[in-house]
Image (cartoon, rainbow over all chains, first blue to last red; front, side):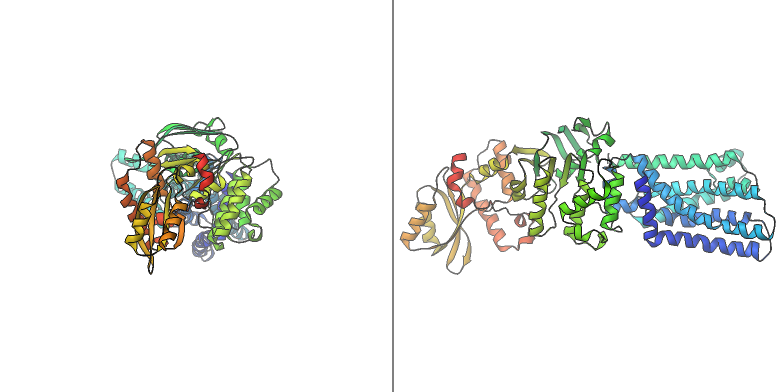
Length: 234
Length: 362
């Protein structure tokens, strides 16, 4: 698993992909930080984190589109699947490599905290909670992206399909406010990645929601493992 | 030891391989011979655990590939048909990755990888990006990858494809050397390759084993036909008449006009008769010089026809001959690459000079 993790992480930064992801991430967050904090003199970083939540929807497909698709195309999946590594090890290696790129990008945002802390008060507990939540929510995005990548050998299809799934989740999230039927609302709340983030935005660390993220991503990692194992039976 | 029993794999309705069973002992070099789509790669993919069979089992060193895949794969080095290379890595990075991937512990990294590169002739390309390597060198990297960790079993799917003749000889020698202390299965559709490297041949056609023998026996079986191609300068009807009147000739006819005033004849001898001397004498007497004499090139297709017919205990019937003449004629006019099988035409090298020796074996 470690070998695959290392190789994939290296591959992100030996191609433009990793840089594009980190750059896109930072351009948007910097802009938001400039507008909501620097120019207005506000010390509330919540908006920046909220924007990251929506930004991931657009840039995670770039991050995950190649995870499996590229291996299928280059036939290197044959190498991985005939090496003495379990399918779960392959999936975790690739998942964690993509996740690490995201963490690298996220680490840069700590600078905002430092800037705000230098000139004013920050609610460290709330910020800490937000970071934990952002780490949690990204596992969902990346797990879904990896799963979709494992279904196709075409990177473009992978990226667009991932974007489509995220958009669908987003629309369902919007629908929550429009529906008045209780049981539909309950179901919509189950599948909403975004709404669950509100508690963190409010400054409350919700363990239930954090574990919700982790469980959803565990489901998709599991499904990805199944897809790889199923390939043998095709 | 590799044991395969009752392996069946279907792709939709099509049968990839059909109840395949064989056992390969430790230290054997076995060649899988078969045309494209015969089931060679499928079999190899199943043995290495990349694909699963619909039924049957494959065991490597007593470990079932399905039951304990990780342990079974640890003993196997696999070079798939298309070498699985990460093009964005250098050879060095790639082999180091493989070293980690296979979790090699028994050998020191640097020395082990250097030894492998020396073996497959990659030393000068160690720092180069795989993307920039030629096909032959990519194939070597693929082979090097299979060798990492010194596995007991090597499975090589068409290891010499895409190499130039010099490289082919080099790689064959490498494989031969490796085979001294390993079990090797290699697939090919080139007959020469099998006789050059392998101790045993499994001929596969349509997902079934058609023959399982030593390469020598196999080629003896095939050359048993005694088909010769003779190029004679002279009028075709007269020469045909002379050839047919030679003692021991079973069949003779014109295939193609080769040069101006000379024709190629396909001549088939009766079993266990060497017709070359009487044929020469007869033609010399008539004043028609032989310009060329060689045993007929047998294509794999012919071999399969022969083997499958032998299996059914049906003798090659006389009325089949004109058909073969036609194929021969066809191959003469085509460029070598026009037809895969023509391209793969196998010259049963030097058989025309070895008749005397071969005779004893038949």
